[in-house]
Image (cartoon, rainbow, N blue to C red):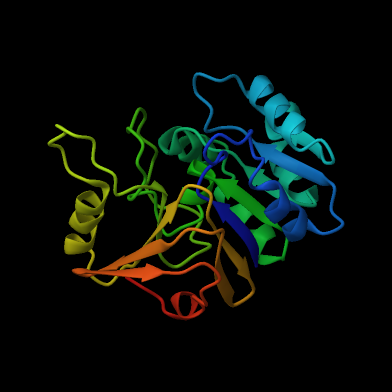
Length: 235
């Protein structure tokens, strides 16, 4: 498998996908044709979403899956698959409706590069139960692509606004681990990414990440070797 899972489409005041471009170029090598899945876009139209990605990745040829006559055939013929962010529940629901989960998984297992950010990274994990998104629609299941045998939490932040008395992100993730003590949750800060090449897993970027497991938190450093999280099969 070859996966690049970005926390976000932007970092700080940078442009759209600007920080991710070096990661994407290295990840894809000589590949220039990308099939883009914009289904997480809700208020943003899929044509507009695809155009935005094309403008940001000017050296690549971006085709929206919604612009093809047969999505399954498009995935089977794709050189690389890219899944954008937005609402994770809407994204997963569309993938179930169009019966695309298994075909995407089969193609990625056949070494077709996969790139996602935000919701597109969420669905690469075991399930979408650690997304930050509001459940605006109910998919048939929360089970996702299971390309990673753990949970992912993009956009992670431990900043708490003054006067805000709701749960912090860490507290919400810990609620998940209380009920699922054997399932790790890898939290990605803005600008960072997970890269999987076969059985190698690395944290990219210049910011620390976190792993939540049972009642513990562990900081992971950029360039950390995280291969052991691919070996275990968690319940």
